Amino acid sequence: TKITFIEHDGTEHTVEAVNGLTVMETAIRNMVPGIDADCGGACACATCHVYVDPAWEDKTGERSSMEQSMLDFASDVEASSRLSCQIKVSDALDGLVVRLPEQQG
Ligand code: FES
Image 1 (cartoon, rainbow, N blue to C red):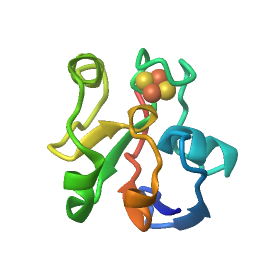
Image 2: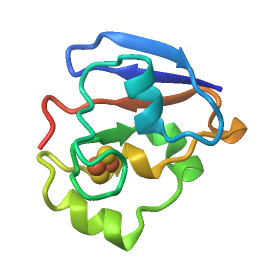
Image 3: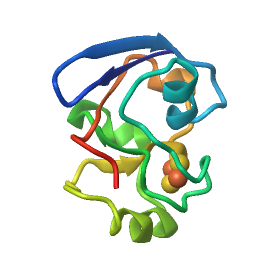
Image 4: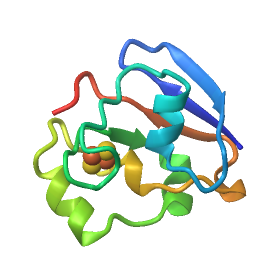
């Protein structure tokens, strides 16, 4: 499953993701800069904020209510904002594109 992360400055990182891991874990494993993930994926820090490409919003699904409340702590939240530790990688997400915010927290 390929996922492309686009940094705020436009730098693209296309990486091979393992199904069953989260998008956040995929970024950390591949040393994609721009995701801090301070809480390690517990949906408790909001420093794994990403913007899901509009073409993929249907496939990545809806925010959970816990995720929604954590996003209140993130900056520059948009309609496409998600916490990347709450998006699980699967074949359905092959080709996924997410953009990274200018900064986390
Ligand atoms: Fe902390 Fe996602 S890693 S909320």
